[in-house]
Image 1 (cartoon, rainbow, N blue to C red):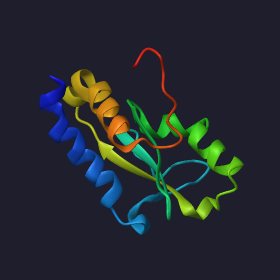
Image 2: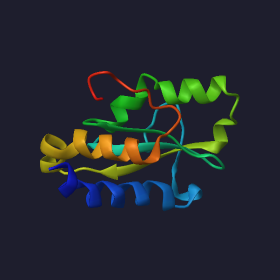
Image 3: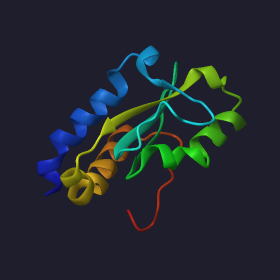
Length: 122
């Protein structure tokens, strides 16, 4: 199954890195400009590229209570205006059956610096 998903995962990764930064979603306290739907998301830096990739069922809720990528970018003293969010929407089937596999392939291919390896995923 993994081999079958690689082209789809790499196409999502290509999208996450190729969308111009000015089209990414600026970070706000309320995240009102972020969809509530499921997505694979990327936290991007304007110059450094991908900082973190993840998946979530409820995108807006995922960020409302904070996210380690934003904390770590603050600790790294990145200008908040240089850190943005990009979403790749997932439909119900992708969310239920493919999202963890797609996320794992994307993280393995991109190696974003803020993604931590979890023993259960290795």
